[in-house]
Image 1 (cartoon, rainbow, N blue to C red):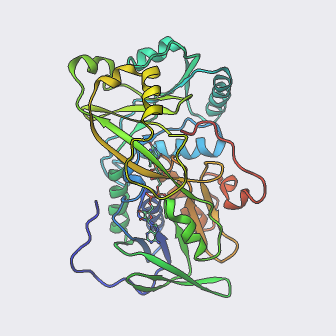
Image 2: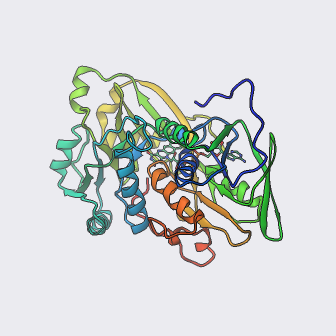
Image 3: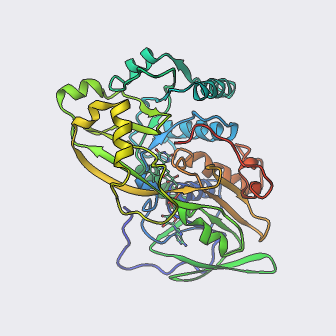
Length: 396
Ligand SMILES: Cc1cc2nc3c(=O)[nH]c(=O)nc-3n(C[C@H](O)[C@H](O)[C@H](O)COP(=O)(O)OP(=O)(O)OC[C@H]3O[C@@H](n4cnc5c(N)ncnc54)[C@H](O)[C@@H]3O)c2cc1C
C-alpha cells in the first residue's frame, strides 16, 4: 500500500521532528503529534506505508497481559480501536470477538489467575472460564486437557493496513508531511544535540528524531550511539481456503482469537477462512522473510492436538514477517540520554500492532515533556544494563 508518486515535491529542508518508520507506531506518533499542534512533523518511510511488520501482523488486539504497563497500553489502545471511526476517522474492520487463552498446565493456569486479578484492578473485565465454557466459544478447539481459560470479550482483531492508512491520512490532514520511498541514512549531531538527518532524498535539518523503525531499529540507534537491543525474528502465518458448510459450524464468525498457550498456536476467522500461526521455537534471529516450511512438523503437531479439523482445509495464502525482538520480549519506549531529543518506540516483540494507538499518545507526551497517559518508565531501553528486564507471561 502507499504508492510512490511519479513526480515528487522536494523534501522539506527543515522539520521540528523526524519520525523514522511508516508502520503502525510511526504513523500513530505522527498523527498524535500533529493533532497536539506540533508543526512541521515529518515522517520518513523507506518503503511503503505499513510495508514492514505491520502488514504481516495477524491483527490481534487485546488488553490481556500480566504486567501493568502492557495491560494499560493494550486497554488504552482497545478503546482507541473501538472509537477509530470517529477518531481519527477510518473503518478498520474491528471484530470484537474476544481473545481466548487456553491453559493446560498448572503453573500457567495459576499465572493466568493472578494476571486476571491484576487486569480486574486496572478495569479490564477478563473472565475465567472452564474448559467446557471455552469450547462453547471456540467449538473447533479440543479442550480435553484444558485446565482453565481466560476470555476478554472486548479483545479481537482488525485490519493493520486500515489503521496505518487511517493515521497517515489524518496526520496529513493535520499538516504532517509523510514521505515514502525515503530512507534515513544517517543522523547528524553536534555537541550532544541532533542537527539533522541525511536521507536518500537529501538533508533535512531537525533537532529531534523519533525511532519507530521496528525490526530495523538497532541500526537507527547506532546512528546516534544509542543501544536499541532489537533483533529481527521471522514469524509465519497461513490463511485457509473458504470453509465448507460443515466447518463453518465449528468456526462460527463469533470464534474468539483462540490461543493454545502451551504451544503458542493461535487462530482467528479471516474472511471466509481461518488465519493461524504459532511461534516456531527453532527460529533464530535474522532478516529472513522468505516463507519456509521448516516449522510444519511443530505446527502440525500443535494443530492435531488443539484443532484437528483445521487439517481438513486447504491453504490459500501464507506469508512471513518479522517480530522486532528484545531480550525480555517487551517494548522499548523512552528518550535517550546519549544525545538530546532522540526518542524511540520499538521492540514490541510481536505485540506492537495492538499497542500502536496508545504508544502514539505516550510518545507525543514524551516529546512534549508532559506527564504521559501511561507511565512507561519500565520500558526504558536502559533497563537491561540496570538488570531490570520486564517479565510478561502473555506473549505469543
Ligand atoms: C507474523 C506476525 C504476526 C503478528 N501478529 C500480531 C498481532 O496479532 N498483534 C500485534 O499486536 N502484533 C502482531 N505482530 C507484531 C506487529 O506486526 C509489530 O509489532 C508491529 O507491526 C510493529 O510496528 P512498527 O511500526 O514498530 O514496525 P514496522 O511496521 O515494521 O514499521 C517500521 C518501518 O520502518 C521503516 N524503516 C526502517 N528503517 C528505516 C530507515 N532507515 N529509513 C526509513 N524507514 C525505515 C521500515 O521500512 C518499516 O516500514 C505480528 C508480527 C508478525 C511478523
